[in-house]
Length: 231
Image (cartoon, rainbow, N blue to C red; front, side):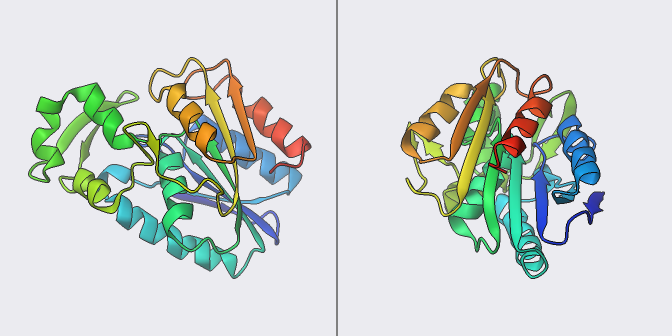
């Protein structure tokens, strides 16, 4: 399933949802409705089904979308939530940015693989890490089965942005980055984002009193960033 609203002929917002969610999430609903009313962005979001694809495959699809949209829109804002943020930062790190001018990261994961291992324990994920079996886990109330080559693809291509406390990302990003993270996040700890922004020159970093979903503050923060001309 996907949403594509042609509201503005010059600018488009591409939204990447989290790992075990889809395009029916609250952040997508709020942003989509706001852009339909104000016409400041066209809007695109699609179900990514991350667990069914390697990160490389997801980046391949995203690159085709971004380069295609770059022929039609002069400015693209890429917004990634949670694991969608992981995909977004790896995209601007490894792929052609086209007309992507800004990246908004919402409670982003910079170390998805480590978080999975920490949650489930090394014994449970041992054969999955070796690419020998699929992995079943529960994310945000949904049981998912992750491909057997998902972890190996990450390790072989160096997609973990933070490893052993080191940030594997340019100090000066190729595009403006804005980051929002909740201090009550129990899924993706805010400490990893603090590490990232201490080493990378982001345009703005905002901490809010909220949980992982940013359900209490996302709308307010989005409107604030628009009003300040940051997105």
